[in-house]
Amino acid sequence: MTNIKYYLIIIFTIMDFLKEFGSNIRKYRELNKYSQEKLAELMDVSLTTINNIERGLSFITADNLEKLAKILKTTPDKFFNSDETSNGKYLNMIIAKAKTMTVEQQQHLLKIMQTFD
Image (cartoon, rainbow, N blue to C red; front, side, top):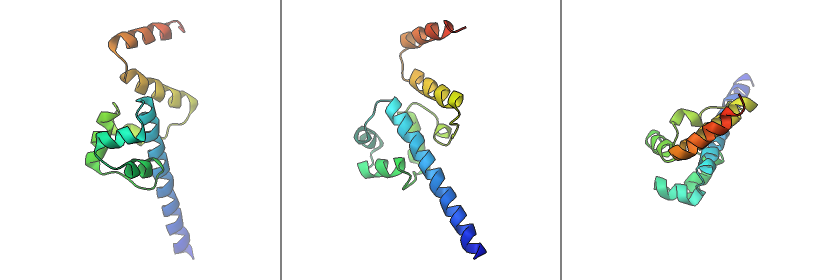
């Protein structure tokens, strides 16, 4: 019975990891204003693949992980972060969004942020 509990804990831990990973990919996809269809096209994978990854039903190869990070203008490690504290969550969203902006837009954002000093 103990072995079964151990294996179930491992299985559920992996499932939680995959869901968190998929949720982070969805967050960055939406920040970049890509539909699942567009991301699948850019990745040269099927829509089902993107959908399954975002729902935590499948994982991604290392090569595709690098490609995905480049398309979503981030680094692969960001998909593994589970910092859901309010500060970390919003800071990550602000950074991801700023990376998609032009230099002029980033300068404007900085001016707005400096008003909070």
